[in-house]
Amino acid sequence: MFQELVNQLRDPDPARRIHALQVLAMLDETRALNAIHYVFKNDSDQRVRQAAKWAGNLIWQAQQRGYNTEKALEEHIAGQLSDKQREAMLANLIIPVGDDRSLKAEMDSLQTKWQHIDAVKQGWEPPPTPPAQIPARTDDFDLLDAGLSVDQPQNIDLDELDAGLSDLFK
Amino acid sequence: MNPRIAAWVSRLKDASVTVRREAIQELEAIGDPEALIPLAQVFCTDPDPETRLLAQKSGKVIYFNQLRKQQLESGASEEERRRAAEILAKAQAKKLRRR
Image (cartoon, rainbow over all chains, first blue to last red; front, side, top):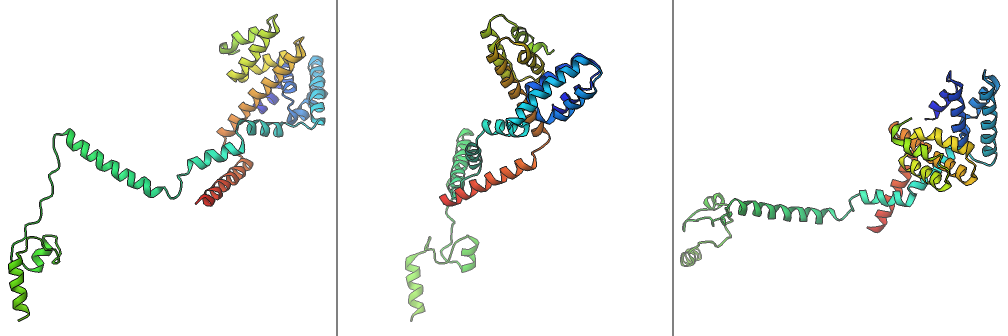
């Protein structure tokens, strides 16, 4: 944008060069002072030179008051979004530490609910898992194959166990 | 001239100061950089000093927004990167204090 305006100072049409000078003066574009000075010294058209003198004066006065384009641009951007707002925005973007576990638990719970809903929708309820059928007399390897610990008193005949223990401690 | 803003540009020459000022503010809201030349003409020639100042203010807003847009398209500057890093570090430190 700035470069376009400076380039327009070299336009073959004097009216366009004057327009560029008017815009640069309105914007107090301090970075254009050298280019405007060059136009004032060298332009072939007297009206353009006059416009350059006027624009150069205005911008120079602004510069004397402590104005410069870079600073003004920075202030303009800062005015749009303050540091505190930026900080708050960034803080909100980061997932709060410590909430990850509760988030995972919530997601797991939701997933279970969705699976259940899907099953109901299809008119099918997941059947309860049948208990492993363990024969009355079995060895540890059979129990392990059935996925149970030998400690689990499932389907165990207590009389038989009692008899077995009595035999053992005879 | 962009036909999108022609209606507002023609109102910049209205006899009523109120209409001219409204047109300036609306051109600022539209943000088309093609409005800079008509605004500069108001800045140079409008008989009302307040309207000239308003045109300057709106012209600067359009110009700065345009510069900003170009900056964003060409990537963040070194200064912006440094400031972003500072802000991020502050936010992380604040979060750690909350834990």
